[in-house]
Image (cartoon, rainbow, N blue to C red):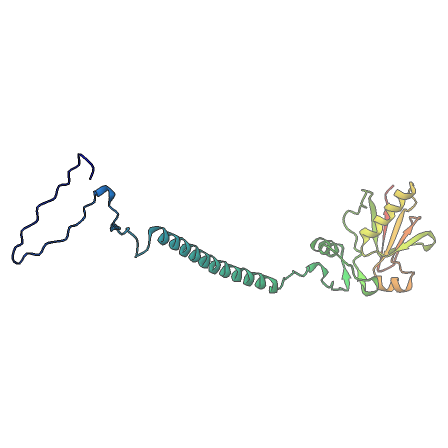
Length: 237
């Protein structure tokens, strides 16, 4: 033993009846404790037994799936309705009005200027009856007889003019057409070459047997009476 060091011995404990000595326990400083410490973990608050983060992730996924399902259903219904409307419009027949201007013109035994004018005004396309189908026309003298350019004519019923004065013949359905043709010739020639006209009432007969003409333009002005179914108009110069 080194000098100066004294070893102190504790006095022995006296023996007692019924007493058992306890083994000495080694004491350790609290800051050097090496025994395993039990840690108490506080449970975290959650939703429906799940962590908050996991719950919200699942909730978002569920909302997205619901939105996709609803959107797909609505889109499908709209697509079916659109296809149905298109198919119905495709099979709907179009109705087009039939123009009434192409009506059949009825022929009458006697055609008057007033009848022809009213028929022409009431339809957009007028097709006159053929000359061969018209038995007779109106050749009565009006109170005033003028051509389209204002030239006046004297009118004589049941009268004819010598055929030696014939210039040309045309088909006319009225006395007005006949005098208009006379004035047109004078406009073209620049002189009063046509001085009178003779118009026959029997249109179909003259058309079939007299060179297809019932209106004759004349260069003479000497009417002759006593010719039924003929009318003469003489130009006033």
